[in-house]
Length: 454
Image 1 (cartoon, rainbow, N blue to C red):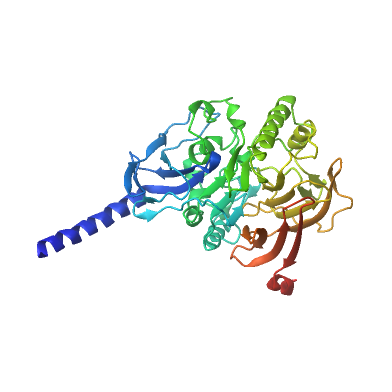
Image 2 (cartoon, rainbow, N blue to C red):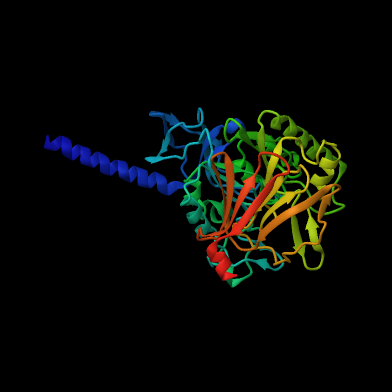
């Protein structure tokens, strides 16, 4: 009997050692929701083989999505990925899966609480944009992740721009930071600071302009894109820009609601920089959005670039929307500006919190690009009126905030409430959303602490 007990103890110790060793070689593990809400487990590791999952009580071998690559393909694609990316597609929402003794977050059939964030990486960009990545007050993403994970969300939505460390650091505040587009920068800019939130809930990822083929697209397709890895569509080859256009897909949030994910990575924001090919490509994607929206009565469109949002530059004034996407929508002549059936759009790109409603049937706009990257310069709260984004598309109400944080959307009794929070998770603004019928409206109240601070 004593021998059996001794063997059991040794077995437990060895099991713990193996788990610790395996976990130590693991850079990140997370669950991605793909088309039709398909849950996909991803593991990024230094191991020569993929780990084993326990799925519904059965051991399953994960397979390699992308092999390690220790050499840059060319000067135009100077990135290395000495890591293995593993994955497994799970049967359905609610599937129980364990990795190295840790239960992975399961997708919910009905999503009731969502954390949203975007534009999270630490900006290192020549000639002079060098954020102090080593100062958690200046780049607070790790604290944002801890606070957001404590919300215990059903789903996390990231509206794009994960990777910002493009140039070597030239400032003391970012000393010893990696740069470029390889896996070391992805690890530092994304996987490490966001680990608690990556393990808290499944994620839906939108692709930002920072993940275009000319920038961090190689990492995007290895790590975050929900589709099967295709080397011919992975931004690896110089001049391979076909990867900049991928079709929209839908992720169910409930039997009545769905999220439609739109890839706007290549949508130029410069007026006069759009081409007929780009406009036609995005027009086709919006037609696909219209078709997807017909399958559910309630649809939220998720993309990186705001269409009916605004920013501000002191030398240029207010900047409205994205000219490529606006032109593409105008060419389609939908009954309203957007495809029918869209009640809310979720975006980033502008490094601020912004919530807009409109006088007509246009969907409410939510911008949540204040997750960690350098914020937009402060701009005037009072907008000129009327504030028109496109012919007949006139702003009714707006709320904005220019401090770091994240957003929570929660459904109760069939209605959605939005809470905008600071990096510590303290509410700054609470808004009741009316998304059942147009015009889509909100009523917001600042938190008591925010009122007192003002």
